[in-house]
Length: 91
Image (cartoon, rainbow, N blue to C red; front, top):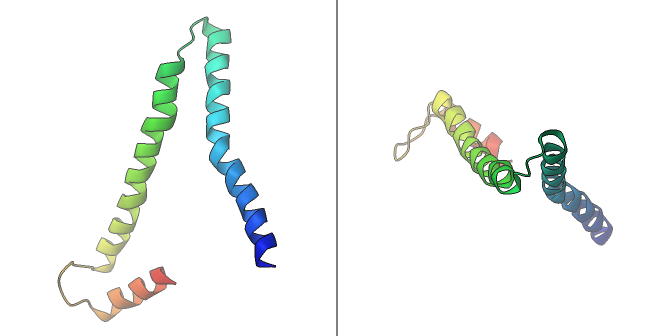
């Protein structure tokens, strides 16, 4: 049962991980067809590198904002409400 679930999850992960790169190639081809300019290097840099870096930055920023609004302070004994929030986030 575990092997079947793992296989199905791996197929879904494979599709979602490769889809942005397939879409990026289509964007380069469309831009060449529409404007006559093939800007594959520029679009690849913007599409993959910049977008991934922005997503990683936002992925780290969002939890820090949530913790800050809950009253979390590093290196200090936490209040009961912060501890409750942290235990909810862990599960």
